[in-house]
Image (cartoon, rainbow, N blue to C red):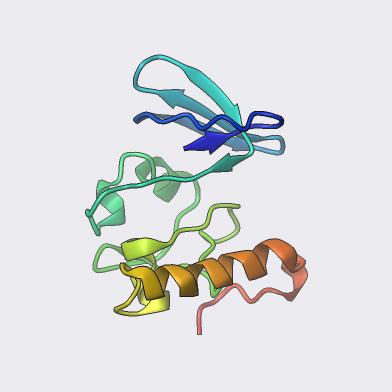
Length: 130
């Protein structure tokens, strides 16, 4: 699901492996050939709990390397992927959230952390999860 400036209509579809994050937002290539520009991106990535097997995240491991433990990325306290403006929740945030990461309680915990990061200046956010 993606939304762009002024576009409140959600776009559902499968993302291809072409995407770019720049100062104006995300540029996405979809499997149907459609190109989308958006400022927010919400993904449902299935049940694979190995970040190295996620087609959309694998290139990010090359461009923005991150420590991985047993397939799970070591995110910041606010579930950010290092210095990149990408936040993860669900199973891939299990190292920071704990065993509830994949259920509703974990989703609530993760969303609280992400919202906190979005409203707090980055200078006041620790980079290492505690």
